[in-house]
Structure formats: C-alpha cells, structure tokens
View 1 (cartoon, rainbow, N blue to C red):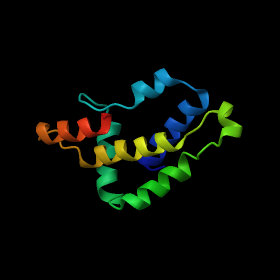
View 2 (view 1 turned 45 degrees about the vertical axis):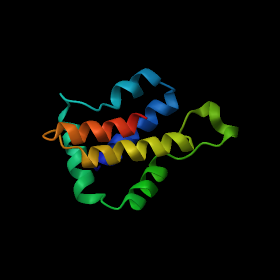
View 3 (view 1 turned 30 degrees about the vertical axis):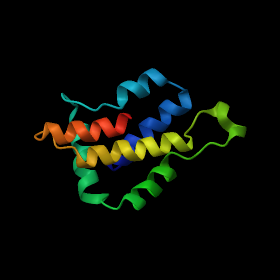
View 4 (view 1 turned 180 degrees about the vertical axis):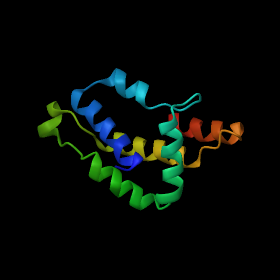
Length: 110
C-alpha cells in the first residue's frame, strides 16, 4: 500500500474511533519526525503534483459522512479541506529553508 493510502487509512481509523488525541498526535508538523513522514513527503512530490487529483483521492479514502451518520465518525467538508492543505504542506515543506516552511505552516494553522 502506498504511503499516502496508509496515512489516510490511519486518519480514517482515528475518525471512526472518534479518537481526537491520537489524531492530534498523528498529524505532526515539525522535526524530529518518523521516517514515514519523509516518505510521505517524497511520495507527494513525485506522485501527487496535481492538487485536484490529490483532493479526489483524499475524498475517496476519507469519505464524507452526512448528518444522518455523524455518530459513526468520519470526515466532514472542513476536515477534508484541512487534510488537503496539510498534505500540500508536506509536499512543499523544505526543512532546510525554515523561513519558507514557517510561512507554509503558518498558513496551514490559520
């Protein structure tokens, strides 16, 4: 399974379990980082340069839950936008250029 697919699958598990603490600790943004985040970054750069295609893939692996099934846990429109921006951050992050990375991170958390 591709790194991105594993990453999104883990997020879906946290959403379905309604485990905010695990989700928060999973969505890391600064070094030191597990090797999987560097692999995710490399995969995003090499295979997911098209933002629209990435958005469609995210929506496929983190399906939207309508209000009738909200108790089951799952994604919602604002969360999907956040995940898209989070992955775009990882695609563009350059920890050798900390000023640029800080600007990108700041726009992610606003």
